[in-house]
Length: 273
Ligand SMILES: Nc1ncnc2c1ncn2[C@@H]1O[C@H](COP(=O)(O)OP(=O)(O)OP(=O)(O)O)[C@@H](O)[C@H]1O
Ligand SMILES: [Mg+2]
Image 1 (tube, rainbow, N blue to C red):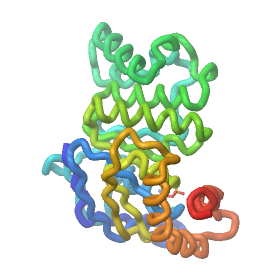
Image 2 (image 1 turned 90 degrees about the horizontal axis):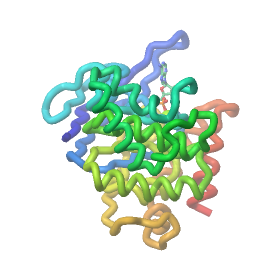
Image 3 (image 1 turned 135 degrees about the vertical axis):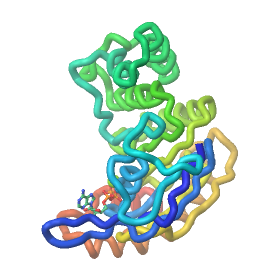
């Protein structure tokens, strides 16, 4: 489904006054497009995903899916977070079936759907396992299967691989590309890792420091599957990093010292040095 973000702004009211997280964002995402969002910490990326998910309302502007304003949360737009947010008291199978239960899918169908997506993320043999028995990468795979089981048109992924080690992340990059190609989902993927954005995205959109506006965007027309270490990926990532760097520094000045993001430092270390 086509997603249109039209002149969207978001201002939060807090005890210390109003905080404008997003100034104005306008972004058109084609059906089946994979768009990666980059920007300094605190610039409003998660806020934008929350607005698209319907978890919160924009202060200005509107969000449309196939021309219709989105409502509250719905199974057409599903979020995947950095922490997999699984239910520890449920098995892997029951975690994936949970949302299907909520929307009233009959039991035999639930089982078929859950098994299909567990197979897709290579966890068929772990359906009876519990969350504490899984590695971080496996947990994220369950979260992906759980989201896909709802058959959303749009997947909203907020730093889903941010807490994983590099090898697991690379593996999941490959798997996510395969899943995306097989399912034709529209994906919005927030990351702090510039190379990850280049590996995954059809398009990489860079936000400015808060209040966020779209600063620049790149179309990535490298052949897939892409490798994170390839020269083409590293070259484009370096170019994007140059644009991002100034805003990361502005945002660091704005944040107090305690909130200086380790992630940003890593990102600079990763991609600029
Ligand atoms: N519910 C809220 N109430 C008040 N302020 C909020 C709320 N949610 C977010 N903010 C503020 O909005 C700004 C943007 O936050 P957001 O979480 O969207 O940033 P982000 O780009 O996702 O950052 P990060 O990369 O660190 O995850 C921040 O200044 C944050 O403090
Ligand atoms: Mg965030």
